[in-house]
Image (cartoon, rainbow, N blue to C red; front, side, top):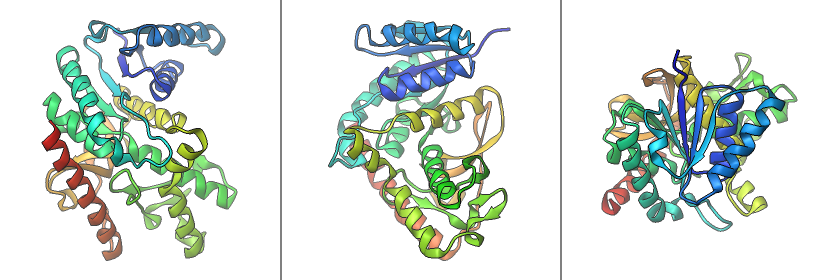
Length: 310
């Protein structure tokens, strides 16, 4: 039986971490590609040499040659400038549009049947860019952000309650930015809504911490987070390659759903072999809907800027 093939574009911190997780989980053979000569090759060789210790045997290839990515099943795009202290995700827009445009053109050429997972920021705008440039079906292009943001939300809740993070199922919607919309009513600890476990003031503090989780790490490291974003992308790739039908918050195309009107935005969705197989429509209350609408408006504004840059 043919092994699945995963291409990770960008051998920086996020890309290398995602490639390593994919190899550790034996999701398939991994191609790590980067334009910097020697970078992907060196990191891939290092990962391959860790295989006998960590007990995995996925083939890992580092290359600058896109021909090696041919017929990949999943392409994870991490390439793009990372945030620095004092920068918002939106500050990266113009440069990263061009980077993602170039990578998306190569993806369409060499991996025309792949499913694409975007990690680069500003996330929702980069998913929109990749979808326009590749011309792939809308369900075959998606963004990682919700998986990361819900993981942060879950971690902060677990820390507050002193429970296992594995028992927390965080749910978020909206764009990947300061106006993301964590949803306490739909977030639970082993099925128990957190609204039954935490005071409203505590929940508000956790929501604020979640929204600022990324910039906190940027200020500490001097650059963007990478372990958690890579884990989120690998989780999505695994759901697709193993047809797991998991429900995950991610940036997905919505038209009639939530009255979005044809944009990529964070929503809970079912991921399987066909990519985004279904959008889960929650019955939002008036406050939740208003927050989502504000976040969606920001996503639409960024998408309009992308149209001018392409």
